[in-house]
Length: 162
Image (cartoon, rainbow, N blue to C red):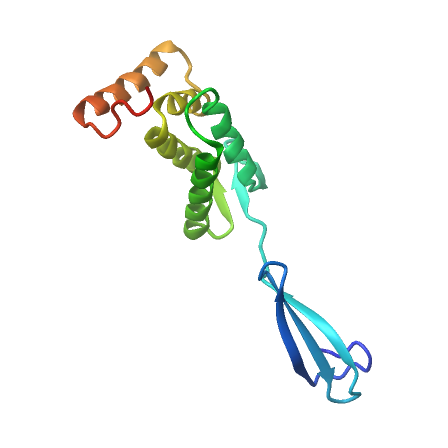
């Protein structure tokens, strides 16, 4: 670290403390050349994470958009906001562990649909109808039939969203 007073590069750390909820390390340093003290802050370098939209444009990742979409889908459904916050955190964590700088909006949408399908079938259908951009009622009905046939094959979803 270069001393802000004399420009020398030799210093020693006198004190280190975490601050800002453990996101920043504050260090008191003393220049070995001029003996003056100064403070530095160390933080993780965060590269801006981007979402690649269907049209190829890129926008900053915003977890609030995921939550807002699920809130709309779950409107007047027996799903708490706390549950949706947990689901949003799970989705965000999965994205962060799988991708470094960019993720497609399609992948995010499929994660949301998977979570909503487990959580509430009506919310899932609402979200899917917007996300998949059904062209007509027959496409919508095909999705419902697919979902109902899967339910008939296993009790894991039955009665959950009644």
